[in-house]
Every structure is written in C-alpha cells, then in structure tokens.
Image 1 (cartoon, helix red, strand yellow):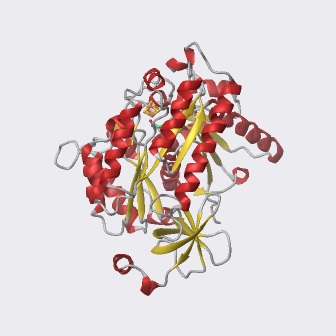
Image 2 (cartoon, protein in one colour):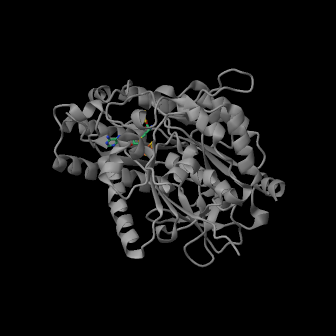
Image 3 (spheres, protein in one colour):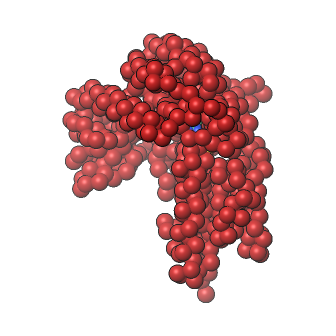
Length: 463
Ligand code: SAH
Ligand code: SF4
Ligand code: F3S
C-alpha cells in the first residue's frame, strides 16, 4: 500500500519577504511529508500568506476565503485553511470571527510552529499564534533541501533582517512585523552557501530596512550590511548580490564604498523617498528632506555611475496640496529613476496618519496617481531605450515565452528576452540589446567564444 503525500498550497500576497516566508513554510512542512501543489482544489492544507499594507491588499484575503468556502462546498473536501502573514498578525482572532472557513491563524514571526498548529487544527481547535519570536523562528526553521532549492529559481531571496522601528506615520509594517531584528552573520552565510551549492547564482538579501542590518558577526561584533555583502561575495558560485529595501537614513558610507568595490553587487537600488515635499516628508515621519535624498543618490552615483535607481511614492497623503504633489513630480525628474512604484495613500487602522484631518478625496488621488505614473513610465522607457545597442550581462533564469527564447534579468533588474540561443538556466552571459518591449528588453546572445573572459571563467568554475 502506498501512502499518499499530503499536499500543500501556499498563495503569497505583498512583498518579497512574503515570497521568502512562503518557501520557508514549505521547508517547515517538508519533513512532515508535505509536497507542493499548484492548485487549492487538491490541497490538504491551504495557506494564504497575506499583506496588510493597503486596504485593497488586506481585503483580497477575504474574497479568496469566499472562493475557498465555495470550493469546499462544491467538492466536499475539507482542507485545513490557514491565514498567515501580515493580515494574520494585524487582525488575529478577528479573522476567525469574520471567516468561519479559517482553521488557523499564524503571524509572520511564528510560522515555524505550523506543523504543530496544523495538528491542533485537525483536532478541531482553531489556534491563533501571533507571537513575535524572530530569532527563535530562524533558529528552529527546517533548512531547504537541495532538491527544494533546485525546484525554485537560480535567483533566490534570503531574509537577513525583519521588522521596522521607523514608524512612518502611514505604515503598518512596524505593527505587523514587529521591532527590527537582524539575523546572525553565521546563519546567513550558511544559508547562502547552501543556496550556492544547490545552483543558486543570485541572492537578494531582504529586510524591511535592510540597510539598517546589524547582525552579530562570528567575531562577536555587530556587522553592517556592507560587511555582510563583502563576506557573501567570497562565496564561489554566487555571481550576483542584491538587497532590498533600503531607507535613506540608514544608507551608510561603507555601503556606498561596497558599490564601488564589489563587482558582484548589482548596480540597482530600490531607495524609496515617498514624496518630494519637505512638509509631507515631515508629516510622514521620514526624518529627512528631499534635498538630503538627492544628495545621497549623487554620492551613490559618484561611486557607481551606472546605478539604476528605483523608488516608491505615495500620492494623496493627508493634507497633500497640489503644490506639494508637484514637488513629488519634480523629484521624480531630478532623481532620474530607472523604475518606480506609486500608490494612492490608504488609511490603515492603528497608524497615526489615518486619524489626521485633510484626508484627500479619491478623485484627487486618482488624478495625481495617473499623472505620476505617466511620468514614471516615460522615465522607465527612456532608461530602457538607453540600453539598446549596448552589451549587457544577463543571468538566464527560465525558458522564455516563445520557442527558442530564454529569459533572464539585466544587472538593472530589467527582464530580458533572449532570442535563438543555446544557453541554459543558470548561465551568466553577455547579450546585445536589440529592442525594447513594454516590460522587457529584447536581446541577442553572443557565441560562447565571444563571451568576456570573466564570464567564461565563471562558467568553468561552476560547471
Ligand atoms: N520598508 C520599505 C517599504 C515597505 S512598504 C520602506 O521603508 O521603504 C512598501 C511601500 O508601500 C512603501 O514604500 C510605500 O510607498 C507603500 N505604502 C506603505 N504604506 C502605505 C499606505 N498606507 N498607503 C499607500 N502606500 C503605502
Ligand atoms: Fe514602513 Fe517606514 Fe518602516 Fe518602511 S521604513 S517599513 S515605510 S515604517
Ligand atoms: Fe505587506 Fe507585510 Fe510585506 S504588510 S508589504 S506583506 S511586510
């Protein structure tokens, strides 16, 4: 008699940190025999790994739960339904009241307890675990097996820091993820080495404020993000390093130097400013001025001239006037972004800004967002056009959409579709950019013999 493996379905919303957490949840349940499934219909455990950052994101979970309830009725199946992530942390037991279909609630700092929570849910309890125990979490989580790593991507995420002490007046993250905690350097290096040994070529270090990283080093001292990056750059097989998201206040001089020194550190930086108006920045509790931000990116570009910059913007923050919004339009121009994300301000329960006077109407927010997005799109297109005709390095991450095509990313994180090439996933190659699509670059590969020497050496070393 063969025993059927129980199936796990995890759907993640929100930021990359949730993507990482979802992988770690699968790792935590793998020793219990769970295998992944792509559809909720045949799952034994369904996990919704949620995001609370804006109202729309938080509401998505309830429409998804509605679909799951219907699916249960139609199929007669009774999978365990878990709500994880930031909505779980923010709403806790409220979720059980609002959605009877939910069997358990687990916050982002306690999912190492999933095996036990699932057992309790199966026994009929409806457990809620929203404790904060970050250091315990990472110490107790099961490691990913080489097979699990190979089944993912050659570009992996690695959380090095969690939580946030900044308390921007609009943001729920300090409440949903708790205080800032950095993982010890030894633990991070060991995880990076395991990823590299299983074929990972690019690692993106994650943290809500990753540039505030201050993990304990093997020497017992506190290490900066820059120092960690120098250490990770020594790992054979790792060709590229990235990190996200940074806060302008924590961007230290040694990190700027690392961008000058480390070839493996990619010239792409997500550095949100949120607004171009000093009054709005103050009301947001960002604790720096627009000019400080511009000076900082000037210093970064002096160290790494081809740095592609990305950012986040909020329009319609309470009290934002037309003139203040124009200041945001100006900083987008001045900072010369390669890409940027923009959002309508969403009042979040428990945050100071949600209670403020001067909430901006939905119509005005929409109008401002459309104008800002048009400007960002024009900037992004100009950046992408500037790459046409130039050779760029691409990490091949997957097969492309069309026959014979492979897809990867440039150093600047732009998706690249490579035509007619005989390259494999995991290859690092130089290509010539031939054109620009709506969301990606088109490129032609060069023959192996025409590849730069450094890339050929890397290919030999990792073969
Ligand atoms: N830690 C990162 C960002 C985390 S949230 C940082 O400090 O930059 C990602 C983005 O969501 C933020 O940069 C911000 O632009 C946006 N955001 C956060 N709260 C929001 C809210 N209440 N309404 C609209 N956008 C919000
Ligand atoms: Fe939120 Fe601000 Fe912390 Fe970023 S720095 S996570 S926007 S509170
Ligand atoms: Fe969302 Fe939580 Fe990330 S609120 S953006 S999933 S930290």
